[in-house]
Amino acid sequence: MKATWSVGDTREVECTRLDRQINVEYDSYRRVYIADGHEWIITGQIAKEDGRKYYILECTE
Image (cartoon, rainbow, N blue to C red; front, side):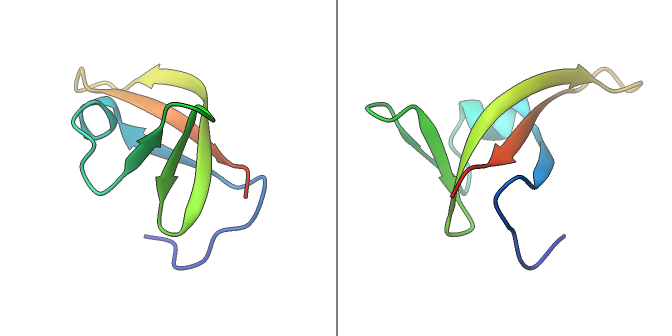
């Protein structure tokens, strides 16, 4: 896992992790996820070969 994040960095996060808010918070007013001390927005979604779905998050702050 990457230790430092910068604006514009992207990461894949399993959908169930965001849906259950595991190690992440959601700010519904600003519509951003807060994880690892940074703010993230969903920029896409992918499905892996094993059938699991992932969101692609982009660091915005």
